Image 1 (tube, rainbow, N blue to C red):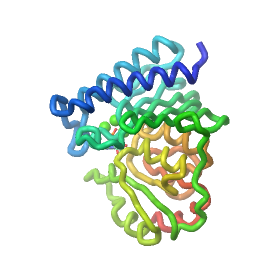
Image 2 (spheres, helix red, strand yellow):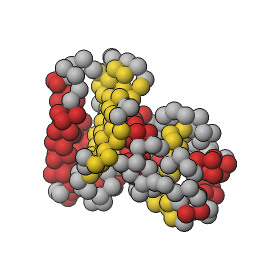
Image 3 (spheres, helix red, strand yellow):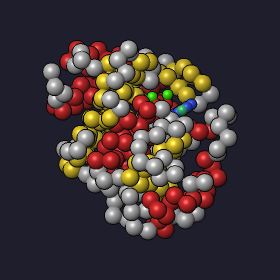
Image 4 (cartoon, rainbow, N blue to C red):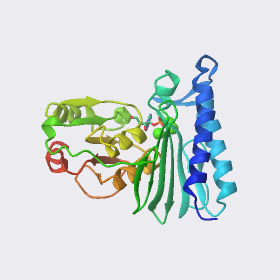
Length: 255
Ligand code: 2AM
Ligand code: CA
Ligand code: CA
Ligand code: CA
Protein backbone atom coordinates (compact mmCIF):
# COMPACT_ATOMS: atom_id res chain seq x y z
CA UNK A 1 0.00 0.00 0.00
CA UNK A 2 1.38 3.49 -0.80
CA UNK A 3 1.89 5.74 2.22
CA UNK A 4 -1.20 7.78 3.08
CA UNK A 5 -0.67 11.03 4.94
CA UNK A 6 -4.04 10.54 6.62
CA UNK A 7 -3.23 7.06 7.95
CA UNK A 8 0.20 8.26 9.04
CA UNK A 9 -1.32 11.13 11.01
CA UNK A 10 -3.88 8.82 12.62
CA UNK A 11 -1.15 6.42 13.72
CA UNK A 12 1.09 9.17 15.10
CA UNK A 13 -1.75 10.94 16.93
CA UNK A 14 -2.74 7.64 18.52
CA UNK A 15 0.89 7.19 19.60
CA UNK A 16 0.61 10.71 21.04
CA UNK A 17 -2.39 9.63 23.13
CA UNK A 18 -0.33 6.78 24.59
CA UNK A 19 2.45 9.20 25.52
CA UNK A 20 0.03 11.82 26.90
CA UNK A 21 -1.66 9.30 29.19
CA UNK A 22 1.75 8.62 30.78
CA UNK A 23 2.64 12.33 30.78
CA UNK A 24 -0.45 13.04 32.87
CA UNK A 25 0.55 10.35 35.38
CA UNK A 26 4.25 11.12 35.81
CA UNK A 27 4.52 10.09 39.43
CA UNK A 28 3.97 6.48 38.37
CA UNK A 29 6.28 6.62 35.36
CA UNK A 30 9.19 4.17 35.32
CA UNK A 31 12.37 5.96 34.25
CA UNK A 32 15.77 4.40 33.66
CA UNK A 33 19.00 6.09 32.67
CA UNK A 34 20.80 4.70 29.60
CA UNK A 35 23.82 6.95 30.09
CA UNK A 36 24.50 10.05 32.25
CA UNK A 37 22.15 12.37 30.29
CA UNK A 38 20.04 9.90 28.34
CA UNK A 39 16.81 8.63 29.84
CA UNK A 40 14.31 6.05 28.71
CA UNK A 41 10.85 5.65 30.16
CA UNK A 42 7.97 3.23 29.80
CA UNK A 43 6.39 5.80 27.50
CA UNK A 44 9.34 5.75 25.05
CA UNK A 45 9.15 1.96 24.87
CA UNK A 46 5.35 1.83 24.54
CA UNK A 47 5.21 4.52 21.84
CA UNK A 48 7.97 2.90 19.82
CA UNK A 49 6.37 -0.55 20.05
CA UNK A 50 3.02 0.89 18.97
CA UNK A 51 4.55 2.73 15.99
CA UNK A 52 6.58 -0.31 14.96
CA UNK A 53 3.51 -2.59 15.05
CA UNK A 54 1.21 -0.15 13.23
CA UNK A 55 3.69 0.95 10.58
CA UNK A 56 4.77 -2.60 9.77
CA UNK A 57 1.15 -3.76 9.57
CA UNK A 58 0.12 -0.95 7.20
CA UNK A 59 3.41 -0.80 5.28
CA UNK A 60 5.18 -4.18 5.41
CA UNK A 61 7.40 -3.10 2.51
CA UNK A 62 9.52 -0.85 4.76
CA UNK A 63 12.05 -1.63 7.50
CA UNK A 64 12.14 0.17 10.84
CA UNK A 65 14.80 1.95 12.86
CA UNK A 66 13.83 3.26 16.25
CA UNK A 67 15.96 4.76 19.01
CA UNK A 68 14.85 2.21 21.59
CA UNK A 69 14.52 -1.01 19.53
CA UNK A 70 17.31 -0.58 16.99
CA UNK A 71 17.47 -1.30 13.27
CA UNK A 72 15.74 -3.95 11.19
CA UNK A 73 17.52 -5.66 8.29
CA UNK A 74 16.11 -3.35 5.57
CA UNK A 75 18.22 -0.22 5.76
CA UNK A 76 17.43 1.02 2.25
CA UNK A 77 13.77 1.78 2.79
CA UNK A 78 12.77 2.29 6.37
CA UNK A 79 10.87 4.27 8.94
CA UNK A 80 13.26 6.27 11.11
CA UNK A 81 11.58 6.87 14.46
CA UNK A 82 12.29 8.65 17.69
CA UNK A 83 9.33 7.69 19.91
CA UNK A 84 9.91 10.63 22.27
CA UNK A 85 12.42 13.31 21.39
CA UNK A 86 12.94 15.34 24.54
CA UNK A 87 12.50 12.52 27.04
CA UNK A 88 14.16 14.48 29.84
CA UNK A 89 11.62 17.33 29.39
CA UNK A 90 8.83 14.74 29.32
CA UNK A 91 9.93 13.27 32.67
CA UNK A 92 9.84 16.78 34.22
CA UNK A 93 6.35 17.59 33.00
CA UNK A 94 7.63 20.17 30.48
CA UNK A 95 5.82 20.55 27.15
CA UNK A 96 8.59 20.48 24.53
CA UNK A 97 8.83 16.88 23.43
CA UNK A 98 7.68 15.19 20.27
CA UNK A 99 7.17 11.98 18.38
CA UNK A 100 9.33 11.95 15.26
CA UNK A 101 8.63 9.67 12.28
CA UNK A 102 10.35 9.83 8.90
CA UNK A 103 10.36 7.59 5.85
CA UNK A 104 13.81 7.25 4.29
CA UNK A 105 14.26 5.52 0.92
CA UNK A 106 17.73 5.14 -0.60
CA UNK A 107 19.03 7.71 1.90
CA UNK A 108 16.44 10.27 0.80
CA UNK A 109 13.85 11.55 3.25
CA UNK A 110 10.40 11.23 1.67
CA UNK A 111 7.94 11.86 4.53
CA UNK A 112 8.46 13.50 7.89
CA UNK A 113 6.08 14.05 10.79
CA UNK A 114 6.75 15.51 14.24
CA UNK A 115 3.87 15.58 16.71
CA UNK A 116 4.12 17.44 20.00
CA UNK A 117 1.21 15.96 22.00
CA UNK A 118 1.42 18.38 24.96
CA UNK A 119 1.16 21.33 22.54
CA UNK A 120 -1.12 19.45 20.14
CA UNK A 121 1.00 20.65 17.22
CA UNK A 122 1.39 18.32 14.25
CA UNK A 123 4.13 19.15 11.74
CA UNK A 124 4.29 17.28 8.46
CA UNK A 125 6.23 17.40 5.20
CA UNK A 126 6.51 15.49 1.97
CA UNK A 127 9.58 15.73 -0.23
CA UNK A 128 8.97 18.27 -3.00
CA UNK A 129 5.44 19.12 -1.81
CA UNK A 130 5.87 21.44 1.17
CA UNK A 131 5.46 21.52 4.93
CA UNK A 132 2.43 22.02 7.15
CA UNK A 133 1.63 22.68 10.80
CA UNK A 134 -1.82 21.59 11.88
CA UNK A 135 -2.89 21.54 8.25
CA UNK A 136 -1.63 25.05 7.38
CA UNK A 137 1.29 25.54 5.03
CA UNK A 138 4.41 26.87 6.82
CA UNK A 139 7.55 28.72 5.74
CA UNK A 140 10.74 29.88 7.46
CA UNK A 141 11.06 33.41 8.85
CA UNK A 142 11.96 36.39 6.67
CA UNK A 143 14.65 37.73 9.07
CA UNK A 144 17.73 38.82 7.14
CA UNK A 145 19.88 40.19 9.97
CA UNK A 146 21.57 37.89 12.50
CA UNK A 147 21.46 40.77 14.98
CA UNK A 148 17.66 40.44 15.13
CA UNK A 149 17.63 36.66 15.13
CA UNK A 150 16.22 34.19 17.63
CA UNK A 151 18.48 31.16 17.74
CA UNK A 152 18.22 27.73 19.36
CA UNK A 153 20.73 25.04 20.11
CA UNK A 154 21.14 21.97 22.26
CA UNK A 155 23.86 20.40 24.33
CA UNK A 156 23.62 16.66 23.68
CA UNK A 157 27.31 17.26 22.97
CA UNK A 158 28.08 17.72 26.68
CA UNK A 159 29.16 14.09 26.22
CA UNK A 160 32.53 13.80 27.93
CA UNK A 161 34.22 12.25 24.90
CA UNK A 162 33.56 15.24 22.61
CA UNK A 163 36.27 17.86 22.41
CA UNK A 164 34.29 20.36 20.33
CA UNK A 165 32.38 22.07 23.11
CA UNK A 166 29.22 23.88 22.03
CA UNK A 167 29.30 26.28 24.97
CA UNK A 168 31.93 28.50 23.35
CA UNK A 169 30.14 28.41 20.00
CA UNK A 170 26.88 29.26 21.74
CA UNK A 171 28.39 32.29 23.48
CA UNK A 172 30.00 33.49 20.26
CA UNK A 173 26.74 33.32 18.31
CA UNK A 174 24.31 34.33 21.07
CA UNK A 175 26.25 37.57 21.64
CA UNK A 176 25.44 38.60 18.07
CA UNK A 177 21.71 37.88 18.24
CA UNK A 178 18.70 39.20 20.14
CA UNK A 179 17.39 35.98 21.65
CA UNK A 180 18.19 32.37 22.30
CA UNK A 181 16.25 29.32 23.45
CA UNK A 182 17.09 25.78 24.52
CA UNK A 183 14.01 23.62 24.07
CA UNK A 184 15.60 20.19 24.62
CA UNK A 185 14.06 18.51 21.58
CA UNK A 186 16.02 18.63 18.35
CA UNK A 187 12.99 17.39 16.41
CA UNK A 188 10.93 20.36 17.62
CA UNK A 189 13.81 22.83 17.24
CA UNK A 190 13.81 21.97 13.53
CA UNK A 191 10.04 22.46 13.31
CA UNK A 192 10.43 25.85 15.00
CA UNK A 193 12.86 26.93 12.27
CA UNK A 194 10.35 25.57 9.73
CA UNK A 195 7.50 27.73 11.00
CA UNK A 196 9.61 30.81 11.78
CA UNK A 197 9.49 30.70 15.59
CA UNK A 198 13.28 30.41 15.49
CA UNK A 199 15.64 31.74 12.78
CA UNK A 200 18.46 29.21 13.20
CA UNK A 201 19.25 26.02 15.13
CA UNK A 202 22.36 23.87 15.38
CA UNK A 203 23.42 20.90 17.41
CA UNK A 204 26.15 18.26 17.45
CA UNK A 205 26.38 14.57 18.17
CA UNK A 206 22.78 13.71 17.35
CA UNK A 207 21.47 10.60 15.62
CA UNK A 208 19.47 10.39 12.42
CA UNK A 209 16.30 9.49 14.34
CA UNK A 210 16.48 12.80 16.25
CA UNK A 211 16.46 14.93 13.11
CA UNK A 212 15.20 12.95 10.09
CA UNK A 213 11.59 14.14 10.19
CA UNK A 214 12.41 17.67 11.38
CA UNK A 215 15.09 18.16 8.74
CA UNK A 216 12.64 17.36 5.93
CA UNK A 217 9.99 19.60 7.50
CA UNK A 218 12.53 22.45 7.72
CA UNK A 219 13.81 21.86 4.19
CA UNK A 220 10.31 21.83 2.74
CA UNK A 221 9.53 25.06 4.59
CA UNK A 222 12.49 26.70 2.83
CA UNK A 223 15.26 26.25 5.40
CA UNK A 224 18.93 25.71 4.63
CA UNK A 225 19.95 22.32 6.06
CA UNK A 226 23.74 21.95 6.18
CA UNK A 227 26.69 20.91 8.29
CA UNK A 228 28.64 23.49 10.28
CA UNK A 229 30.67 24.36 7.15
CA UNK A 230 27.58 25.05 5.06
CA UNK A 231 27.64 21.82 3.01
CA UNK A 232 24.03 20.90 2.16
CA UNK A 233 22.71 17.65 3.63
CA UNK A 234 21.37 16.06 6.78
CA UNK A 235 24.32 15.59 9.16
CA UNK A 236 23.37 14.30 12.64
CA UNK A 237 26.92 14.90 13.88
CA UNK A 238 26.82 18.62 12.96
CA UNK A 239 23.45 19.95 11.88
CA UNK A 240 22.87 23.63 11.15
CA UNK A 241 19.43 24.74 10.01
CA UNK A 242 18.59 28.35 9.22
CA UNK A 243 15.99 30.38 7.38
CA UNK A 244 18.62 30.60 4.61
CA UNK A 245 18.84 34.39 4.84
CA UNK A 246 21.17 34.44 7.85
CA UNK A 247 23.25 31.38 6.89
CA UNK A 248 26.18 33.42 5.55
CA UNK A 249 26.28 35.50 8.77
CA UNK A 250 26.26 32.49 11.08
CA UNK A 251 28.77 30.27 9.22
CA UNK A 252 31.89 32.33 10.15
CA UNK A 253 30.90 31.97 13.83
CA UNK A 254 30.58 28.17 13.82
CA UNK A 255 34.32 27.55 14.38
P1 2AM B 1 16.14 12.27 23.31
O1 2AM B 1 15.32 13.07 24.19
O2 2AM B 1 15.39 11.43 22.34
O3 2AM B 1 17.20 11.47 24.02
C1 2AM B 1 18.48 17.62 23.01
O4 2AM B 1 19.67 18.32 23.06
C2 2AM B 1 18.55 16.48 22.02
O5 2AM B 1 19.61 15.58 22.36
C3 2AM B 1 17.30 15.66 21.98
O6 2AM B 1 17.04 15.42 20.63
C4 2AM B 1 17.66 14.38 22.75
O7 2AM B 1 16.94 13.26 22.30
C5 2AM B 1 19.12 14.24 22.42
N1 2AM B 1 19.90 13.57 23.45
C6 2AM B 1 19.64 13.53 24.77
N2 2AM B 1 20.61 12.86 25.42
C7 2AM B 1 21.51 12.50 24.49
C8 2AM B 1 22.77 11.78 24.54
N3 2AM B 1 23.25 11.32 25.69
N4 2AM B 1 23.42 11.60 23.37
C9 2AM B 1 22.92 12.06 22.21
N5 2AM B 1 21.76 12.74 22.11
C10 2AM B 1 21.07 12.95 23.24
CA1 CA C 1 17.29 9.20 24.22
CA1 CA D 1 16.03 12.08 20.32
CA1 CA E 1 14.11 9.61 22.15
